[in-house]
Length: 226
Ligand code: HEM
Ligand code: HEM
Image 1 (cartoon, rainbow, N blue to C red):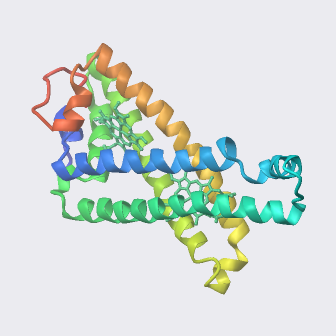
Image 2: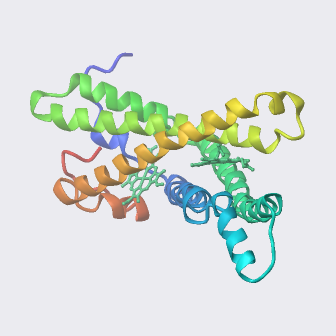
């Protein structure tokens, strides 16, 4: 039967212990992945350091050809990629954990159900609650974008791992890499918006929001609590 009243805010804001554990492990792994890229492409940037390797060896009286320099850079890069790949595989395992958790969670706690509840609450909200309901719905929509992005990241990441072993994946490796890299910017954008958003809500409207994501303790009874 179609609901005619807006669902309570709690219907969109109910986190299980498994969900909270997933949130913080996932956040740590995603941050770790971004750090490996920061080291690979900016801080270490081994490929870009080849002329410096050559200059250092020349200073000591030796010589290092371009090819030898690239081989050294490759060794350093591979060490960083090894971290990226192992963290990526762990992230993929947590993605699977999230998917299974969604299937096992009571229907009302699943992300899809919470998104629908937020949409219904927005549609049926009284004028005084409209702004809060809109904000809650927008937040849920950003989560939907994140879940899509992380799914794409896991699929393309696994594709890159197997690109050397599966001919079909080898043929599309370049495109897969481009999709994988472009999705990173969606994830960075999400994190900036998300962290700024939750800190802002914590300070202005819903004190204890962040600690509830840690401890899962009873929710405050503020109207914004969604
Ligand atoms: C890489 C970093 C992070 C990622 C990828 C991430 C991801 C997510 C996702 C996907 C959700 C939605 C859960 C759901 O409703 O299904 C969420 C909720 C939440 N996150 Fe994060 N998060 C990150 C960092 C943080 C940080 C640093 C904080 C605290 C400062 C935080 C606090 C929260 C809170 C309080 C919620 C619940 C908000 C609400 O009920 O609307 N997150 N996060
Ligand atoms: C938030 C998560 C992630 C971010 C931000 C990220 C970012 C990136 C970026 C920017 C590259 C470089 C692509 C290029 O050189 O053009 C890359 C490469 C790669 N990523 Fe990820 N990635 C993430 C998750 C994953 C996951 C989940 C996996 C595996 C399941 C994975 C596996 C790989 C592999 C195998 C490569 C290629 C490494 C190589 O060239 O040897 N990544 N990643």
